[in-house]
Structures are given as structure tokens and as C-alpha cells.
Length: 606
Ligand SMILES: Nc1ncnc2c1ncn2[C@@H]1O[C@H](COP(=O)(O)OP(=O)(O)OP(=O)(O)O)[C@@H](O)[C@H]1O
Ligand SMILES: [Mg+2]
Image (cartoon, rainbow, N blue to C red):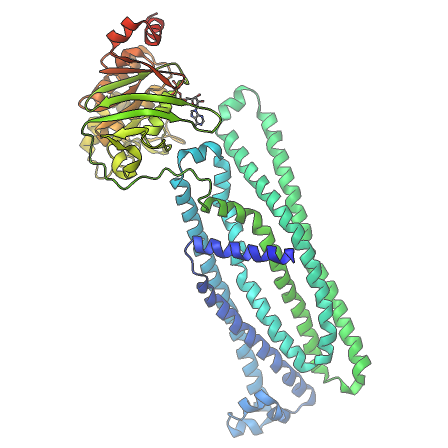
């Protein structure tokens, strides 16, 4: 049956999830063991109820000596107790209370060990999901949404694992049902045979609901992720929303997604909560059927005894509850299937743009970096770089210029290994850049990127990010060299001032200099500088120019410059246009050429 296959594949998926987070399913044996023991004790305590009630009604307890298991146990008691009715009653009642308490203690043990297992699993899952995200190449984040990832880490991970968190309840219910069945059969197998088919109705009703819940789960997961996307998108672009008076429209947008989700969530609740009343209705029918048949089939005096029947009904009542738990568990699996699929997608390597390093250790640049007929495209439909060929000699300053959108930053993205490039597209000392381990290669490269990313942390920690054992004097030196000293002295807490998200906001020029300070502190021999496009006042421009001059000193540097004044000292200038290298040479050579560079130069002069 396809439906069974579906739930089977859900279990397989859950198991593969456990494997992915390195949790052995055998750990589950601990809560399951507790559950099993507690179900057994529950059966025993129910079994003891019958003689207790019987004895209570008959005001005599001697008959218990003849009950199979109980009688044997009682034979171990001292004779004084066995002969005395009151003492015997006390002993049996005491035994019952002890067993009943033990059952609950074991049940608690099952719940606690399950909670431990569940929370550890969830922690491992989150940890591994996060390390997966960090390991993906930048391309992954170009084509997916941060809001979705945030929702996945916080919400979907818990939902995906939720069946595991409830597995002890399921197992306990399953064991209890088995024990109940045995006790019911022992009290009266005839009545039990009549009662069982009625439970089948409950089973099929729940099965029907499960299919519907499963379909809804996927849609709910999609809406949940859309909700996450929308909130992150809007909250991080507030100035845009305000400037275009879009508050109302965005509120409506958000409300409509939230509304869709609420409706779907409600439909799942409608189905899930149908289980309980259905269960109770069916139970009352079962009880009535059992009651009628006990009169009809067995005649009045053949019914075992009033206490037995009482216990019988009590068990039937409990059984229907446990039966609901067992059948409803499939609903829980179904409900988790949407989030589970999303989580498994992140865990799988399929269609993930990894940028994997090779095995060669990079120990420093000896000769040159070559771009060797390099072609590149982010997506299949559009070529960005075509046949780029040029070389960067050690110790020189190379400038890259060209119109906006030409592909300059793309070159840097490849050099920084944010994206994978074609084999032998970039050679470092004659070795394919892809052959070096990422760690050893990137240790020698520092980047001042076009848009400076700041963490919500102190200015000092922003400058020292990723570096160990940095002395205060080093930090102060780079702050001076990056022409940040005056700015820092004006900050309320100096280098300890919080910046970024919820701290002091930095201007474009200040950000650039923080970025330069970072790169200077790293002290890498290859420096890549992608100058921000924002226009700066002459004073700031002069500061940045000084900072750049400081940074490129005695290094192999690649500078993408928008202000051509930045690159007047360059040893070589590469002109990129439409993803192609159209000219190269020194400032003087290129001016004589009267090509693209000459035009850019003329434009900026005025
Ligand atoms: N992550 C990306 N995914 C897809 N296309 C991209 C991506 N980044 C850049 N592009 C496209 O590649 C082209 C080159 O972009 P690039 O950022 O390299 O230009 P640039 O020369 O640095 O421009 P600018 O001077 O404005 O910084 C652009 O048309 C841009 O739309
Ligand atoms: Mg750029």
C-alpha cells in the first residue's frame, strides 16, 4: 500500500536524520527500556486491583493464595501475615501502592531520558545545520533566502525532530496496549474479541486524517519560511520601505502570508483534535458493546466478577487513549514531514555549491598570479568573464579599472575563492589556485571589500576578527596607519565602542578605513582592495588615499579603483569592459592608447 510506504519512508528519513547528526538510534533504548518496564508494572498493578476489590467486597483474602502468580509471591511472606486477613490485605495493598509508584517513577525516567536524548539531538542538528551553512559557497546564498535559513535553524529543526521527541510516548503506549491486551484476554477473551474490531474503526479514521495532515504540513512549512523571509527582508530594508511609503503595503503583505499560515495551521488542528472526541465516542461504543455482550453471551452469573468487569472497563478506557497515541503518532510524523524535507535538503550535498580546497599547502607567493583565459558565469544563462588573461607579479601594484558591472569584483570573488573558478583559470606560481588548501592560501590574502561587513561587536573585535594573539600596540598601529586614530579618539569608549547593527553607525569612509585596518593587521602579503563606489569628501578621500598607500607598501596588491587618482602609482593597469580585458599598461601607456582608459581618465578630470 502506498500510504504505508509513505510512513515507512518517513521513518527512514528520520533515521537518516539521526545518522547525519551522528546520534546512534540505540540511545533510544534507554527511554524505551524505562517505558517497557513502566508498562509492565502498570499491567501488574492493574492485575492486582481485581483481587483487592474482590477481597474488599468479600471481606476475606484467603482466596488470593490460589491466584497463580500472586499466590506464589504471597507464599514467600511469613506465616503470621499469610494467616491474618487484615495483615494480608495490608501487604497486598502495600505491594499495589509500591508497584504503582514504581511505575510512575519509571515513566518519569522515560520522559527525562527522552527529553535528554531529544534536546541533545536537536542541539546536534542545529550545530550541524549551522556548520553546513557556513561550509556552502557564496553561490548558495545568492540563490536562497536568509529568512528561510533563520526559520529552518530555529523552527524547522525542532519540528523535523518532533517525532523523535515523542517516540517514548508512542513506545509506552504500544507496550501498554500489549500489556492491556494480555490482561483483557485474561479477564475475558470473548469480550475482547468483540471489542477489538471497534478499535479498527478508530485506526482507519486516524489513517485517513494522517494523509491530509501530511499534505498540509508541506504547505505550512512553505508559508513558515515565507514569513521568515518577509520579516527579515522588510526589517533589514526599513529605510527603503519608509522612503517609498510602503509601510501599509508591507503590513498587508505580511498579514496575508501570516493569515494563510494561520488557516493551514487551523486545518491541521481541526484534524489532529478530531482524534480525541472520535476516540471517546468509539470507546463508549466499545464499552456499551462489551457491557451488552457480557449480559447476552455469558448470562448474569458467568461474568467473571464485578471487580473484574470494573477493571475491564477501566482498561478499555485507558486502551482507547493509548490507541489514540499510537495511531496519532503517524499524524505527528506526517506533520513533521514538510520541515523534515527542508532540513534533509540542507544536509544533503546535492546541488550545493561547495568551494573545496585542494591538498597543496600554500607557503607564500614567489613569482606571480596569472589569470589564464578565465571564463566565468554565476548562472548558466549569462557570461560574466570571458577569456581574461593577465599576470600580477610579486611585489607590484596592479590596478583594475572599468565601467560599473564590467566584472571587476567578480575577479576578486574568484581570487578570494568565494566562488569556484574553472580549472587552471587562475594560476598562483604556476599551480592551479584550486589545488591549494583554502586555509593556507587565504592566510596570505587580505581583502578590503567593496561593502564592509561589520559585526555587532566592539570596534577592536571588528578589527581583530579572525586573528589570534593580537597585541594592543598592533591594533593601535593599524588604527594609525588606516588613518582612523582621530575617529577613534572621538568615540565614547574608544576601541571598545560597540559598532555595527545595534551600535555606533559608521559612515562609508569610516567603514572603508576599518576594513583597511583589518587587512593591515592581518599582514598578509597579497592585498586585494575593492574600493567602495560611494563618493567621499576631499578630506576623507585624502585620508583613504593615505591609508591605501600605507597598505600597498611592500606588498603584492590588486586595487580596484573608481577614483583614478588612487592608482596613479600602479605598476600595471588592467582595463576590464564587458567581462573582457580590453587594455593593459601603465598610466602613461594607456593614455597614449586613447582607448577606454583614456576616456575614463578624461571624464574624471572634469
Ligand atoms: N552573485 C552574483 N550572481 C549573479 N550575478 C552577479 C553576481 N554578482 C555580480 N553579478 C553580475 O556580474 C556582473 C559583474 O558584476 P561585478 O560586481 O563584478 O561588477 P563590477 O565591475 O565590480 O562593478 P562595480 O564597479 O559597480 O563594482 C554584473 O552584471 C552583475 O550583475
Ligand atoms: Mg564591484
